[in-house]
Length: 224
Image (tube, rainbow, N blue to C red):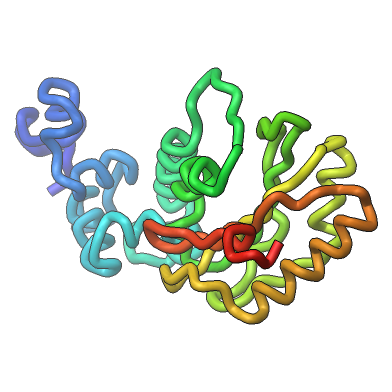
């Protein structure tokens, strides 16, 4: 039965309105984002099936839009709504509205970017552009790789820094496995980029490898 035909007290939207979002189960919150079900299934039914496919809400949040769109009853439009909602949540966790973000050490960098990157299902390489006082000017995604590797070219890394007149940069990438231990390729790439930065009179403060709930700073390990 479609949610619209349920008793009003049982409908997720109405329950959220009168009782608050904390009163709803994960499937009900997902159902509100989906908006509607499919033939023979309510939005809550579809939401439950999505959770069953991936096992948890956190696993759903880490999926790409194209993957979610293939789930029966979801499709491109609903998948886009889900991914947009999860991305908004990541950005809210990572940013303090109205505050100038100063990245003075690895812990501050992880606090800012960990929520954006730790649950992604493929490797993403990002660069944070800083001013002379280590304030964040902006950040840029440089590449999105496969589940195991990301292709990064020095030209693409340093071009945003030159255009923004950044004083320094911080490199970041995630390990979808959840283990932030740097690989030999991570170390090789870092050293290559440090050498390139010297030629441009640009400083690389750090390179953080982000895992699930933890990180490794290559600067702290003496590689930078």
